[in-house]
Image (cartoon, rainbow, N blue to C red; front, side):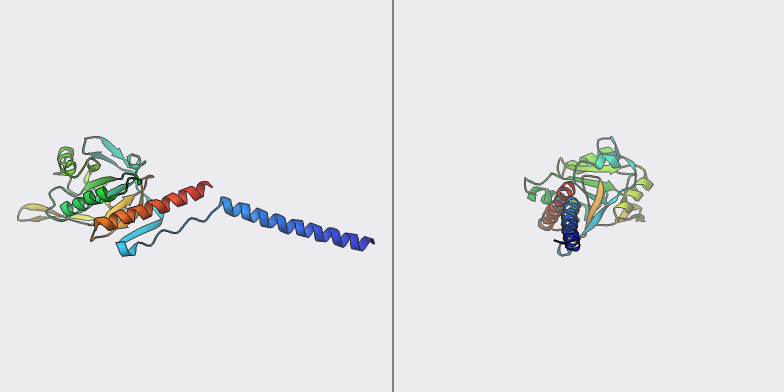
Length: 221
């Protein structure tokens, strides 16, 4: 075998090794960097899921037990949050009742979420009043009250708004009617618009949880 043929064979072998190495390297890289699954399309359930959950601003408020609650307090569990007030004549009782029915429909294998009423009327919604109100719906129902502007900013973080007005000397509060779903990192994961149907709320929560679980497991692989 002459020298030119030997050189050609060596070059070919090196080329094959290089290509093989690139293919294997690409496969290893892809396994360790799996693209996250896109957020599920739940438009038929009036639900919008964020591909990238939104971080809430820092806040300090008080719960129904008189305890201080911050953004970090929301970590560790899923939470359905709702902006309303205890004297609300119609929207809030219906919303809370729908959440209570949703809670009863959730399969046992799913994590137990909390349900959080963020008051839009802190002047009247003291911790004690919130405790009496939320206790009627269940042990996983809680309330937040505190400084009006802090509550307004938290509501804004949840894409909600509220406004006060006087009607015949009585305070009425106009407020958003959607639910905000917070993930265990205390981030805004989804918005669920009315009308609310407990069966759809339970189904939406299950699908969002499974999607988040899949992405979390892929990120670890």
